[in-house]
Amino acid sequence: MPHNHEAILQKVRQELPTDELLCDLADLFKIFGDTTRVKILYALLESEMCVCAIADLLGMTQSAISHQLRILKDADLVGRRREGKTIYYHLSDEHVRTIVAQGFEHLIEEHTRRV
Amino acid sequence: MPHNHEAILQKVRQELPTDELLCDLADLFKIFGDTTRVKILYALLESEMCVCAIADLLGMTQSAISHQLRILKDADLVGRRREGKTIYYHLSDEHVRTIVAQGFEHLIEEHTRRV
DNA sequence: CTCTCATATGAATACTTGCGCATATGATAG
DNA sequence: CTATCATATGCGCAAGTATTCATATGAGAG
Image (cartoon, rainbow over all chains, first blue to last red; front, side, top):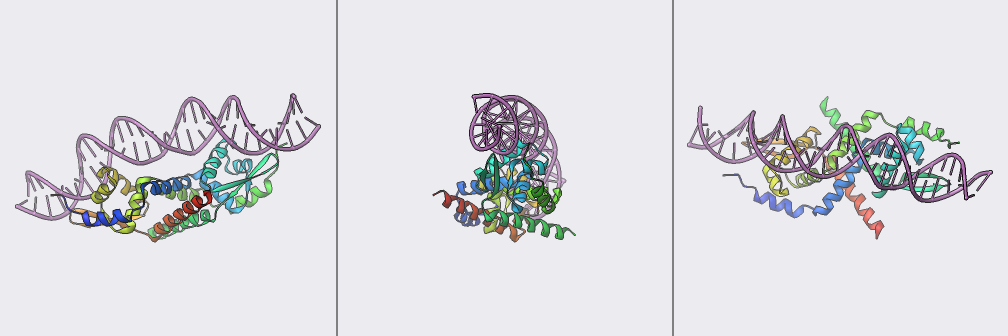
């Protein structure tokens, strides 16, 4: 007969957040899970930048950057400011710094464990 | 003529980590960016669990869970322990807790801002 | 050895997504 | 008004990926 794990299942089921919340969480991390977006966020850690400057920096199309900035904006990870024809983007939240920093720490630990 | 942003570009270029590091970081977050994997990680926050218990909990195939666990294992986010025929998975790292917690905080702030 | 339970894995499929092209919007200058 | 610079967006394609099915591996019981 298959083995039993009802006891643990009950306990975990109680503590597990709602499906909706867990999906939102995954969606948030999905945004960090793309090289282009991570690069943009990292650049904005240093300074606010306009779209074409970011495109220059990453060697990509203005269109590609605009698409990604829209995603970051929809997630409230960046904000923008207009100055004439130019639009400057900036981080909207200190959590970005913390999340990125924690990611780094894990990478470093993972790496040192391998040595 | 197009506007100039060489000054900022130089500064940002200096501070930007290597491409490889940024890719690794994105790859790490990519792992958190899937509902099934987030659920698994959240469950493991509460207790170590065997594969079929997780499959039960999420109402998914044992195969699907196994595939995802492999990805989590390859990223060193979970470890495992054998006990007879059963294999118990557990979190391998406290950073998982921190990263998830920060994600939550952002979601909450984002939500309160909207009200 | 065989049989069964627990888990892992390869293949096929359906779905998602990042990118560039072409074009639209929006603001300023003249 | 028109022309130009900066940015946004719809479309199409190529690449990636999460799932399931079928099957393989691996451990313990008898």
